[in-house]
Image (cartoon, rainbow, N blue to C red; front, side, top):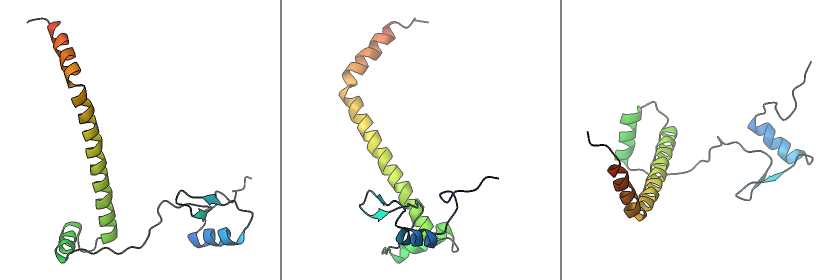
Length: 119
């Protein structure tokens, strides 16, 4: 019979925090932002305050539905906006590369067209 190791046993957040503070044998890890903790939960939420107009809140209520979770709606909208801005930045970079190489690419395309058969 195999046993489940402690590392693979699901624990609640409160148990993780208790282990982190009580067990000096557990290794701590320096997180990128400089905080010391031995675990990381990607889904962790941070409470924040955002000021929105009444009109925007009403529109969110109409689009998402009255029973919708506004936090989830706004988080998804923010991720969508981030993806859009990244895509625009990538496309602008690609356009700059193509613009720099336009003369060479155009002459190469004209050269290839000369080899096409006339039908």
